[in-house]
Length: 167
Image (cartoon, rainbow, N blue to C red):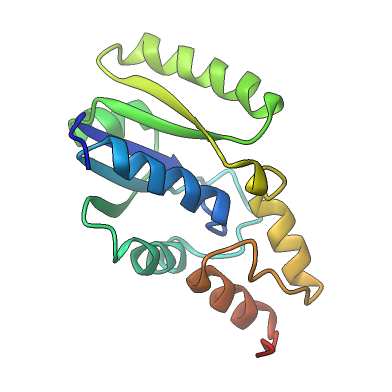
């Protein structure tokens, strides 16, 4: 574990995927503390899991990671980053389309809070096709998503959709 300061890894994480986990594990190797911050987005009406459910999943996923913690926030990310005295925002990227969107947000965040840097971490190629949206859709049809999400997310998805996991 290095010690390059406190980082915030924000997202809706609905659900938390193996791509998210890959980015988190790599961020934990770089930063002395990584806060996984679940966005309470009132504009996103199609959440599968409540904030409490997402935080419970994340707490289980983060339990073995000594320098990761779970929190939630609403409002502007930069206000939260300032409040927790972080100096880095970690964003995961899967494809060029993610980069274009994230670049705009990073520039806006830098304008509003220049003390924080945005760091992009590319998800491993094996997770580049996995999105929370796709996992939710597959789960809604009863598909096995256990290879795409951590065990805590898989159990929650199976419970939400009434899926019986096979051995």
